[in-house]
Image 1 (tube, rainbow, N blue to C red):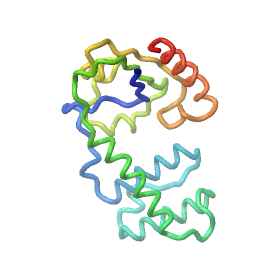
Image 2 (cartoon, helix red, strand yellow; image 1 turned 60 degrees about the horizontal axis):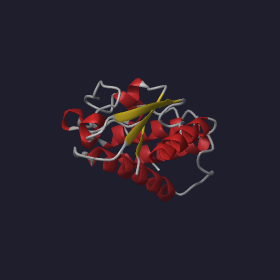
Image 3 (cartoon, rainbow, N blue to C red; image 1 turned 90 degrees about the vertical axis):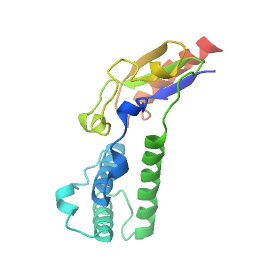
Image 4 (cartoon, rainbow, N blue to C red; image 1 turned 60 degrees about the vertical axis):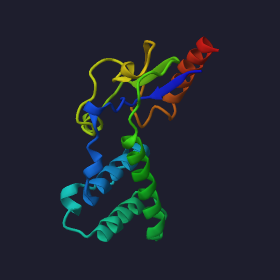
Length: 176
């Protein structure tokens, strides 16, 4: 069996995430940024612009911006966006709550992207500086690192996903 990790550091205690104490404004700004990276569209949302607004007004502002750039159909219900926001937040919190334990005995391959943005790194108080981003502390075997094109967000999209798929297929063939 192969444990394939996609562009994420091991959250060892010294690299505890910062998101767990974010306020609504910071969460919504981060979610808007994630949506921008996924869509390639600019939502033009900053913490400074939405901080004075109530949480409901902030959500409505994001909805308006998403409708403006066609990420949501015109006159979408706010519940649709609330579901998107809750899903992204739950995903982020689940990741941030997971702490790997050492002793994994199978092969691990970390697929790291060639482009890492500072704002992605800023989400962690400290990322291990070794090439395995700390996963070597979780395994009894050496961790293989494969560098792939794109960013954390685009590595699973065309054209980058083809290179990733090829490298993943090669890794699977090695362990089977």
